[in-house]
Picture 1 (cartoon, rainbow, N blue to C red):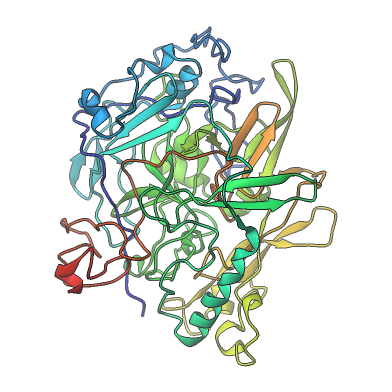
Picture 2 (picture 1 turned 120 degrees about the vertical axis):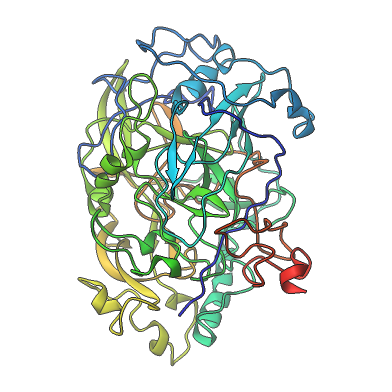
Length: 552
């Protein structure tokens, strides 16, 4: 049986949220989709619909004015819950004069995207807690402060307690792309997944020392690493790597967004979505959640702090006054992976979060054509990453003993786990597979390996693919359409993003890095936490350097 593990939090922000409230997250002055909303009509993701049937974004007054324009909002008011804005220069010495984001070009799209959570009290296993999120802007950035609590009653799916985590994120209002002159790895660095292959065959329950794909960053101290590739379209694209362990963005409720992998335990650098049921009401894998890293049916879980690896759009739907439109009990019933992968779309999706490079994160439905203010074509997005298993990274003649089930067609978990699901390394999951047909990919149930999320998937260049009923995303899981560029939440890898199109500004709070040589300091243990300094257990990112009380 595998040992539970905890993603590690490094709290770099000394500030604190004191009262329940809501505010803003970062926006991009160059992205006109900010605030665009709607439903997909499938039951797979919910809608937020305050824009009406056109799918038009709320008027922001244009990128040069910062005006709020005629939004038609009734009663929507950004709240104030944060009391340490005067100390922001202690964290960001170069911060300019802070003001209401609605008065900054591009800022109203920021403030209007956030959920209003003031007055909300959530239940945390019998304890009452109040979520907090708000923002301020200077001329160039939005600063989002929160206490990293969900806006709904805590649903425990890991062994880890929910704790408040004062967090501060800084996001560019006008994202910039990495230049051609920056040093960058070729995307072929993924060949280092051969280390994962060898490790899995030799000791499947023990992780490689660090995440092995080299496609995400293990750099310390906020250093930015890059990838570069030349696409079939002729474009040479440069991307910034996302952190292997840490914040990649922030939800509209102020909670950290993380990448598509876990840490080294219990499933080495595994895929948290593969532990999820296909449809709300079905059991998780494993059924003993204390042994896994499963998500709630909104896409989040606690591991040091609350964070999200994916999105159920219905959980982030806004009522006209900005408050959450659905309770968890209602929104969770929209969890339906097959429909989230293939269902039709009626209206463009809303913003559900913001990436650390300043671009918005939207749900899975996108406007692909406009006639003035009216969206004339809406399609579901599809990731360009396909499931390919771990076996392609080696040729051991005896690999079938450990990997013989990888990628096998299945109807249920019994096919993938003949000895039972607890302790099994596979699950029967709906995955995207490469296909020779005109669509280029198909959705099928296959036995999918829980481990090494990056190494079991590969990117397929779709830059020249005309699309069909859906539109392919780029390597980073984003799309540039008539409303600008945005990342899109998908129900297949990488779920939110696989890289940054722009240049990130790393969060000063939330889930930060915790792996690699020494790592950052893990948190001291609080009631209910595991893999923290003081629990007499050394594992994951804990080392003798950063946690001598457990690893000395």
